[in-house]
Image (tube, protein in one colour):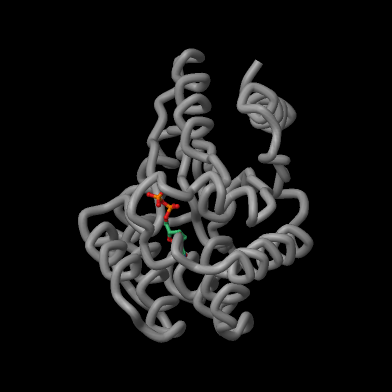
Length: 226
Ligand code: TYD
């Protein structure tokens, strides 16, 4: 099967860098995402900051549905992957071609962690959808777009829950049990084991400055920052 689209970006050649941040809700990614964007900008790099689900007008609409409406796990997976397809085509691939540093608050690993391990949806089907969505022409070709580096903020679900408590009105996922988030963490672990070179595991229970040093080191090890 082929999804032909003349203006579909190639998904392959790029000069940019693609970094994703992952972790359970409350793991504390946000401040470090901002700080990393500033660190790249200080080196004169153009940065595209984005998030999933979301990042484009259409994907943000799908985000509102996914985060607020009850639905079965396959429907949820299809919506996040639909959002991802639009996000890749409209924002991520063009930014990588320009040579930007693309920093995304979550990407595909979140689908495996939340819909796969959290909600118990079939992992193999998610692998199929990943391949369908993250290749330029939908399943054709060997190149499946993935982040160049994924920073996984690993935090005990009980600590994350305490951090989130009272912070804001919880959305559909934030109101899940610690048991749900234990499964989500297990999903991230499984993704890391399948592609360990792509991942840096960040112990997120440290002081903010210590966590930042670990984030910076992971990026420096790739040779992307001095
Ligand atoms: P999050 O990234 O934590 O944003 P905010 O800090 O604004 O709440 O929220 C996104 C939520 O969506 C989070 O609970 C994880 C969930 N999610 C999925 O379930 N599947 C996915 O594929 C993605 C990208 C996110």
